[in-house]
Length: 173
Image (cartoon, rainbow, N blue to C red; front, side, top):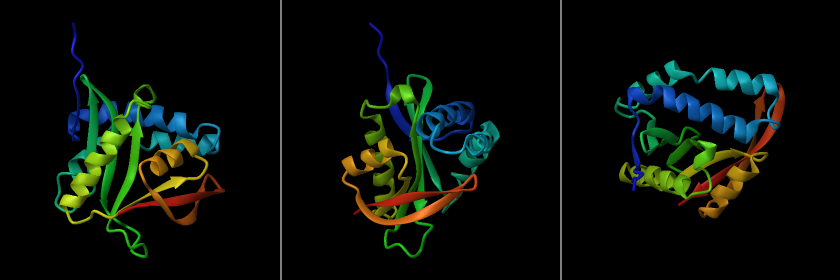
Protein backbone atom coordinates (compact mmCIF):
# COMPACT_ATOMS: atom_id res chain seq x y z
CA UNK A 1 0.00 0.00 0.00
CA UNK A 2 1.30 3.44 -0.97
CA UNK A 3 0.60 6.55 1.02
CA UNK A 4 -0.01 9.85 -0.75
CA UNK A 5 1.10 12.82 1.32
CA UNK A 6 -0.66 16.13 0.70
CA UNK A 7 0.81 19.23 2.31
CA UNK A 8 0.69 23.01 2.14
CA UNK A 9 3.94 24.90 2.56
CA UNK A 10 5.78 28.05 1.54
CA UNK A 11 6.93 28.19 -2.07
CA UNK A 12 10.54 27.31 -2.81
CA UNK A 13 12.77 28.21 -5.73
CA UNK A 14 12.72 24.54 -6.73
CA UNK A 15 8.93 24.78 -7.25
CA UNK A 16 9.28 27.11 -10.26
CA UNK A 17 8.83 24.48 -12.98
CA UNK A 18 5.88 22.83 -11.22
CA UNK A 19 4.21 26.20 -10.56
CA UNK A 20 4.58 27.12 -14.22
CA UNK A 21 2.96 23.83 -15.29
CA UNK A 22 0.06 24.22 -12.83
CA UNK A 23 -0.47 27.86 -13.83
CA UNK A 24 -0.62 26.91 -17.51
CA UNK A 25 -3.08 24.03 -16.97
CA UNK A 26 -5.30 25.91 -14.49
CA UNK A 27 -5.53 29.06 -16.62
CA UNK A 28 -6.34 27.08 -19.75
CA UNK A 29 -9.05 25.21 -17.86
CA UNK A 30 -10.51 28.40 -16.36
CA UNK A 31 -10.17 30.87 -19.22
CA UNK A 32 -9.92 29.07 -22.58
CA UNK A 33 -12.93 30.18 -24.61
CA UNK A 34 -13.52 33.04 -22.16
CA UNK A 35 -10.53 35.32 -22.70
CA UNK A 36 -9.32 36.23 -26.19
CA UNK A 37 -6.97 33.43 -27.28
CA UNK A 38 -3.91 35.60 -27.99
CA UNK A 39 -4.31 37.48 -24.71
CA UNK A 40 -4.59 34.21 -22.77
CA UNK A 41 -1.47 32.79 -24.40
CA UNK A 42 0.46 35.97 -23.62
CA UNK A 43 -0.68 35.94 -19.99
CA UNK A 44 0.35 32.30 -19.60
CA UNK A 45 3.70 32.86 -21.33
CA UNK A 46 4.57 35.71 -18.94
CA UNK A 47 4.51 33.29 -16.01
CA UNK A 48 7.14 30.79 -16.98
CA UNK A 49 9.63 29.22 -14.54
CA UNK A 50 11.75 32.41 -14.29
CA UNK A 51 8.73 34.45 -13.14
CA UNK A 52 7.93 31.84 -10.47
CA UNK A 53 11.56 31.75 -9.26
CA UNK A 54 11.52 35.53 -8.87
CA UNK A 55 8.17 35.40 -7.10
CA UNK A 56 9.39 32.74 -4.65
CA UNK A 57 12.50 34.82 -3.95
CA UNK A 58 10.44 38.00 -3.34
CA UNK A 59 8.18 36.03 -0.98
CA UNK A 60 11.10 35.77 1.43
CA UNK A 61 11.37 39.56 1.74
CA UNK A 62 9.56 41.25 4.66
CA UNK A 63 6.22 42.79 3.70
CA UNK A 64 6.06 41.04 0.32
CA UNK A 65 3.29 38.98 -1.27
CA UNK A 66 3.31 35.46 0.11
CA UNK A 67 2.89 32.22 -1.80
CA UNK A 68 1.83 28.84 -0.51
CA UNK A 69 2.12 25.66 -2.53
CA UNK A 70 -0.18 22.66 -2.40
CA UNK A 71 2.09 19.65 -2.69
CA UNK A 72 0.52 16.34 -3.73
CA UNK A 73 3.08 13.60 -3.34
CA UNK A 74 6.19 15.20 -4.79
CA UNK A 75 4.32 17.37 -7.32
CA UNK A 76 2.99 20.92 -7.18
CA UNK A 77 -0.80 20.64 -7.25
CA UNK A 78 -1.74 24.29 -6.72
CA UNK A 79 -0.80 27.65 -5.28
CA UNK A 80 -2.19 30.73 -3.57
CA UNK A 81 -0.65 34.23 -3.60
CA UNK A 82 -1.74 36.80 -1.01
CA UNK A 83 -0.81 39.80 1.12
CA UNK A 84 -2.08 43.22 2.15
CA UNK A 85 -5.01 44.54 0.11
CA UNK A 86 -3.65 46.60 -2.78
CA UNK A 87 -6.95 48.44 -3.40
CA UNK A 88 -7.05 50.96 -0.59
CA UNK A 89 -10.64 51.99 -1.38
CA UNK A 90 -11.84 48.60 -0.09
CA UNK A 91 -12.18 48.04 3.67
CA UNK A 92 -10.64 44.56 3.70
CA UNK A 93 -7.10 44.46 5.02
CA UNK A 94 -5.95 41.30 3.22
CA UNK A 95 -6.17 40.16 -0.38
CA UNK A 96 -5.80 36.84 -2.10
CA UNK A 97 -4.38 37.62 -5.53
CA UNK A 98 -4.58 34.15 -7.03
CA UNK A 99 -5.65 30.65 -6.08
CA UNK A 100 -5.30 27.97 -8.73
CA UNK A 101 -5.18 24.19 -8.73
CA UNK A 102 -4.08 21.72 -11.34
CA UNK A 103 -7.37 20.56 -12.92
CA UNK A 104 -6.71 16.98 -11.69
CA UNK A 105 -6.70 18.31 -8.10
CA UNK A 106 -9.96 20.25 -8.40
CA UNK A 107 -13.16 19.10 -6.72
CA UNK A 108 -11.36 17.24 -3.91
CA UNK A 109 -11.49 19.91 -1.18
CA UNK A 110 -7.85 20.86 -1.71
CA UNK A 111 -8.68 24.38 -2.85
CA UNK A 112 -10.58 24.91 0.42
CA UNK A 113 -7.55 23.77 2.38
CA UNK A 114 -5.25 26.09 0.44
CA UNK A 115 -7.68 29.02 0.87
CA UNK A 116 -7.96 28.43 4.63
CA UNK A 117 -4.17 28.22 5.01
CA UNK A 118 -3.78 31.62 3.32
CA UNK A 119 -6.56 33.09 5.49
CA UNK A 120 -4.89 31.78 8.66
CA UNK A 121 -1.61 33.39 7.65
CA UNK A 122 -3.35 36.67 6.78
CA UNK A 123 -5.10 36.65 10.18
CA UNK A 124 -1.76 36.08 11.87
CA UNK A 125 -0.53 39.25 10.15
CA UNK A 126 -3.61 41.23 11.31
CA UNK A 127 -4.98 41.10 7.75
CA UNK A 128 -7.91 38.79 8.48
CA UNK A 129 -10.66 40.54 6.54
CA UNK A 130 -9.94 39.46 3.00
CA UNK A 131 -11.01 40.20 -0.57
CA UNK A 132 -10.46 38.18 -3.73
CA UNK A 133 -11.36 39.29 -7.25
CA UNK A 134 -12.87 36.86 -9.74
CA UNK A 135 -13.89 37.41 -13.34
CA UNK A 136 -17.64 36.88 -13.58
CA UNK A 137 -17.08 34.67 -16.62
CA UNK A 138 -15.20 32.28 -14.34
CA UNK A 139 -18.43 30.86 -12.92
CA UNK A 140 -16.63 27.95 -11.28
CA UNK A 141 -14.39 30.37 -9.36
CA UNK A 142 -17.35 32.54 -8.33
CA UNK A 143 -19.24 29.47 -7.10
CA UNK A 144 -16.16 28.37 -5.17
CA UNK A 145 -15.83 31.70 -3.33
CA UNK A 146 -19.56 31.90 -2.64
CA UNK A 147 -19.41 28.33 -1.26
CA UNK A 148 -16.64 29.37 1.10
CA UNK A 149 -18.92 32.03 2.56
CA UNK A 150 -17.73 34.95 0.47
CA UNK A 151 -20.07 37.91 0.14
CA UNK A 152 -20.23 39.86 -3.10
CA UNK A 153 -18.80 43.23 -2.06
CA UNK A 154 -18.32 45.27 -5.22
CA UNK A 155 -17.87 44.95 -8.94
CA UNK A 156 -15.41 46.39 -11.43
CA UNK A 157 -14.23 45.80 -14.96
CA UNK A 158 -10.88 44.49 -16.14
CA UNK A 159 -9.64 45.07 -19.68
CA UNK A 160 -7.96 42.00 -21.14
CA UNK A 161 -6.89 41.74 -24.75
CA UNK A 162 -8.93 44.80 -25.67
CA UNK A 163 -12.13 43.38 -24.14
CA UNK A 164 -13.80 44.52 -20.92
CA UNK A 165 -14.61 41.74 -18.45
CA UNK A 166 -16.80 42.32 -15.40
CA UNK A 167 -15.34 41.04 -12.15
CA UNK A 168 -16.61 40.68 -8.61
CA UNK A 169 -14.81 41.27 -5.34
CA UNK A 170 -15.69 38.51 -2.86
CA UNK A 171 -15.28 39.60 0.77
CA UNK A 172 -14.52 37.43 3.79
CA UNK A 173 -14.57 38.77 7.34
